[in-house]
Amino acid sequence: MRLLKFLILIFCWCKPQLSTALTDEYDSLLRVEHQALVEPLKYIDLLSFETAASKAETTSDLFKKVLLARLYSFHGDVTLSKTTFESVFHQLPENNLWLRGYWMLHRSSLSLEEGELPQALKQIDHAIALFVRVNDLKMLVHARTSKAVLLLWQEDYELSIELLEAAYLMSKTSHIPEATLNYVYLGFAAYYTSMSIFDQAIKFAELAKDNVVNNGDVVNGLPIISLLCTTYERAHKLELANSCYDQLIDLSVSVKVPRFLFWAPAGKASVAIQQKNYSEALKLLYLSKSYLPDLAINPAHIVALYNNFGKTFLALNQPAQALEYLQSSEQLLQQYERPLNNRYKRNTLLLKAKSQEMKKDFVAANESLWLFIDLVEEAKLTTQQKLEQEARSKYESSQQEIKLQLAEEKLKNQQIELERLEKDAQLQMAYLVIGFLAFVSISIFTINQHKAFRKSQYRANTDALTGAPNRRYILDFVLKKLLDKEKLFAVAILDIDHFKRVNDQYGHDIGDQALIGFTHTLKKYLNNTECKFARFGGEEFLVVMPGYDVANATVLITGLCDFIRESTYTDLNISITSSAGVSQYIKGIQLNAILKQADQKLYEAKNTGRDKVCG
Image (cartoon, rainbow, N blue to C red; front, side, top):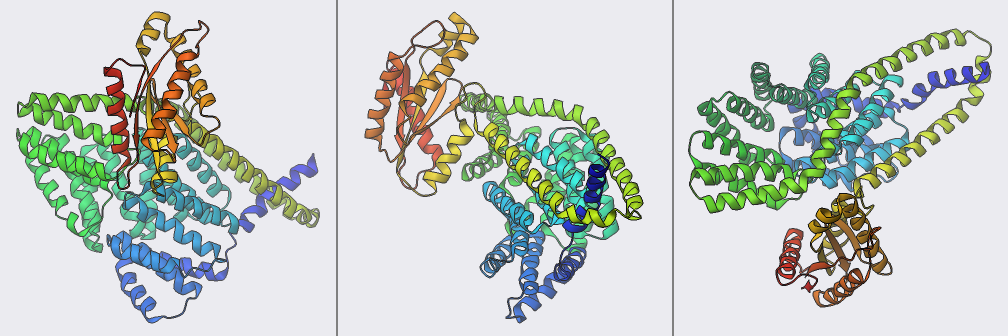
C-alpha cells in the first residue's frame, strides 16, 4: 500500500511536467501570439507584411498566417479572415498535428460568427482530438472550454458544465498558465449566465477580466468585458451594466474594433429599454445598426437588435415601424437553422402579434399568436430540460466550490509529500514506473471520455419516453446524409388518430404505452429498409425514406398504416389508426418547405376522414 501511494504521488508530480513540455519552437510562437493579443492592430500590419514578403512555408510562417486570420476576425473583417484561414489550411503539413489543431481551434470561432454552429462544433472536435494526440494540456484546456461555450448555443447545458469542470480541474492539477485559465473562467461565466445564476457568472467574469487587464490582453479582454456587461444587464444591475458598456466602447474605440462598437451600443440600448428610456434606446440602436454594413455578425445578434427596435417602437406606439424590423428578423431566421431559432422566433412572433394588435389587424395578430403557441409547444421539452438543469446548477454551484477547493487542497498536500519523497532514495525506482502509470492513466481517461461522449450523444438523440430517435437526430440525418448531398428522398409525417381520446378514456399511462407500442410497430415494419423514423413531437412521428419518390413513398406508408391498423397496443389490446402526409425532396427546396408540404398533406388526410395517406 505504501509503495502504491508513493507511485501515485510520483505520477501526480511528473504528469504535469510531461504534459506541458512543448518544443522551444512552439514556446516562441506562443510568445509571439501573446504580443499580438496585447497589440492587435500593430501585429495585423506587421504580420501582413511578414507573410506577404515570405515565400517559405515553415512552421513559423504558417503559424503567423493563422494568427493573422484570427486577428482579422477579431477586428471584424470576416471576409479577409476567412480567405486567410482557407489559404493557409491547404499549406498545413499533415504531420504537424499541433498547428492543425491551432487552426481548427480558431477557425471554429469564425464559423460561429458566420452562423455555422454545426461546422464550428466539428472543427473544435478536430482540435481536441489533435491536441490529445500531441499531449498539449494547455491547448486541450483551451479547446475543451471553447467547445463548452459552443454547446451553450445549442442548449446542451449538461455536457457544457461537464467539460468546464474537467477543464478547470485539469488546469489546476497541471500547472496551466493563468492566461489559459481565463478561457475556463469565461466559459463558467457564460454557462452561469445561461442558467441565470448571476452571482456565480459575475464572479467568474470579473476573475477573467482582472487577469486580462493585468496581462494587457486586448483580443480576449474585449469579449470578456462584453460578457460581463451582458451579465450585469441580465442580473438587472443596470448602473453597473451601463458603466461596463461605456468602458467597452472606450476600449473598442482605442483599438478600433467595429464589432464591439456594434455590441456595446446594442447592450446600452437594452439597458435603456429596461429603464423605459425609449428615446435613448432608439438613438443607441441606430448607432449600433450603423456598423452592420461593414461587419459580418452572427445572425442571432442581428435578430436581437431588430427585436429591440420592435420593442422600442411598440413602447412609442409606432407599430408599423416595429413590424418593419420584426419582418427583417423573420427573414434572417428563415436563412439559417440553429437550435436556438425556436427561442428567437418565439420572441419575434410575440412582438409581431402585439404590433399587429396595436394596428387593429386582429386576424394577423391571431395567426401570429397561433404560430407562437406552436413554437411554445415544440419548445416545452427543451424548456423543461433547461429548468431542470438550472435547478441542478443552483445546487451544484455551491458543491462545485467545495469540490474545486478540495482539489486544490489535495494538490497542495501532494506537493508537500512529493518534496519529502524527492529526498528519499526510492525516487530512482519510481521513475521506472512513471511511463506505465502515465499510459494507464491516459488510457483510462480516454476510455471514460469516450464513454461519456457516447452516453451524451445517445441522450441528445433519443426520445426519453419511447426510446425512438428524436427530432434533433432525424433532422440532423436529413441535413447531413441527404440534403447536403442532394439525394432523392421522401418524408412522411404520421399522426395517431384521436390520440386524445386514448388519454381521456384510459389515462395517460395507457397513452404512454400506446406511444411505445406505436414506436415498436414502426421499427418492426421499417426494419429491413433504409428508412429512418423519429418521434417528431406529441403523437406525431416522422419517417424519412432515402431513394423514394412521392409515389413509392405513398405505397410504403399506406402499407405501414395498414400494419398499424392490424396491430394491437397496450395491456388493454386496444387498436389505433394513423393518418399520414407524404412529400418528397426536389432540388433547391429547403427542409422546412418539405416538412410543411408533408404537414399540409397530413391535415388533408385528417380532414377527409383520417386513417388514410395523402401524398
